Amino acid sequence: MTDRDGGPAGVRDESIEVIQREMTAFARRARATAARMHPELSLVSFTLLAHLEHQGGCRATDLAAHYTLDKSTISRQVGALEKAGLVERRLDPADHRVHVLHLTDRGNAVLVQVGDARRIAFRERLAGWSGADLAQFADYLLRYNEAAGEGPA
Image (cartoon, rainbow, N blue to C red; front, side, top):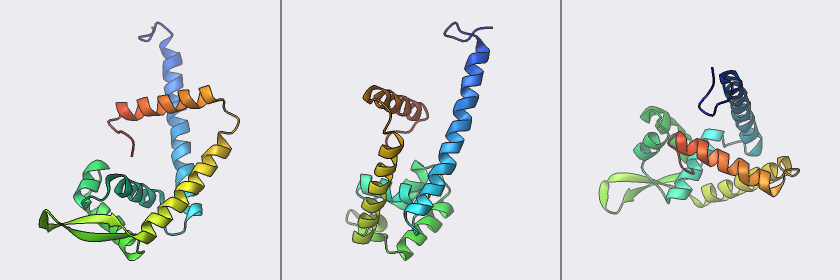
C-alpha cells in the first residue's frame, strides 16, 4: 500500500504519529513556560491578550467564537484578566448595548514583557538553525494552521 506521494503508507502514518507526539510535547512545554514568564498569565490568558491587541479589542462572544470555546469559559478567563487589571470593558460607540474588551495600559505592558521573553526563548532555542531551516519551519507552521482553519493569532 502506498500513500498519495507514492511512498509506503506506513512511513506516512509513522510521521503523523511523530508529529502528533511532538506537538503534544510542544503544547505542554508552552503551558509550563507561560507560567514561568508571568505569574498572572497562563498560556490561554496570553493568547487572549494577544488576540485583543491584534484586533484592537473585541467582544467576549467574538473570543469564544474565534477559539471555539464555551462562553462561560471565556467569561471566567476575561473575569480573571479584568480582576488582574489587564483588560477592561468599554461600551461599543456604535451600539451601547454591547461591551468591547480592550487591553489596559497594564495589559499592554504585560503583553510586551511576555512577548519579549518568548521571542528571546525562541531565538535561543532556534539559534543553531539556518535561515533556510527557519523559513521552511515557519512555512510549514503557517500551512498547518491554515489547513486547520486558523490564520495568525
